[in-house]
Image 1 (cartoon, rainbow, N blue to C red):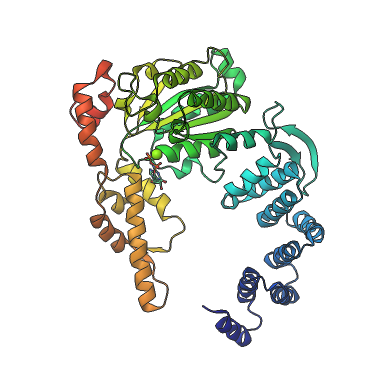
Image 2: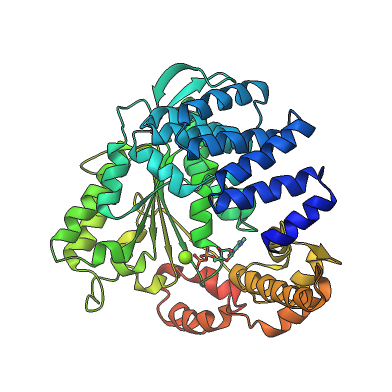
Length: 457
Ligand SMILES: Nc1ncnc2c1ncn2[C@@H]1O[C@H](COP(=O)(O)OP(=O)(O)O)[C@@H](O)[C@H]1O
Ligand SMILES: [Mg+2]
């Protein structure tokens, strides 16, 4: 819809607050700040306490270079409406602009605490770079009572900067939780036992001689949630999350990779409690006998010695790995103290598919949606295949909406049709996995795969 027709609509209903707000935002987006302000003032004349309008005015002030004016208004807004996450988030942005990283972090955390969907990785990264690793106790009006480090050690934004230097992701997907991952109960339990419970109950675990940390390796067909699970772990616990894609290490000259790997582990130890995630572990951990297409032997040894923690403590450090090709893994990785838990992540069973369907359905306009029916029709589908079903069905609904010129929900029927069109992607993986499991099943490592295929009980 173009602006002209919206103004016509406004002329017809000049007191339509949602419409006024919408046009104000469009004007703002095209930098017509005065027009936008005027519309917001009209809203406030009708409804003096309208928080979207109040926030909009603050945003416009900031835009036009009057950030301290904006801050005064936001402070007031936050003290009167302490649960208004949008106001906290704007305070975070403005504090960041003013170089106040620590303060920005308090505001950012408050905003995300109130509303997870406000999480913004790019913003958080900027805040971290600006020194916002400190957390404090904040009153509801935004006053900071006590400043303390995340983890009691003198960590500064330096770490984020260093992570950027190393080319690794240093962020918290604060918007993802275990509840965003369907099924995978065993993996969730394992991660809880390895890091979440021990961090929350250190004395209890110490009494049993246990500490937080260790290594968990996830393997299985692609698209079944391994990477998603790692991200959700980061959101679930208040720990630093470092994610390393292996190409980032391997695309280096020989000799440089080892050093880089060492630096990554050192950084992770410094930021403890931390989760260090290696995606597609196979490239690095490839069997030492088969080094042609993979990392050098010294790099594998470096990885093992870092995992062993012989030279430095790995307490409170959870190392997660994910791979689609476990048969390329060096046997040395499987010993205790390294990846001491190795978990097969199979395609979701029917109950898990039902859960995943509900997750993918969130926020979509649906009618006659029956998650159990979707689950029934999608035997052998991965979580990613299920997502493709929802994407296809959504496209069908959109296509129809365009034809009709009105809103059309995604129907159960559209989902059923899409389920016919999307082909399950996990079969191919099992063909190759089966051979490895049958002919290279040292010490029963692949029993889980054989059991899944019904070859072994
Ligand atoms: N168990 C699951 N629950 C919810 N969504 C899932 C699940 N598994 C996969 N997905 C969807 O498929 C996408 C790809 O999954 P991903 O975690 O990258 O798979 P993997 O790392 O195992 O190859 C996810 O971003 C998510 O949208
Ligand atoms: Mg993955």
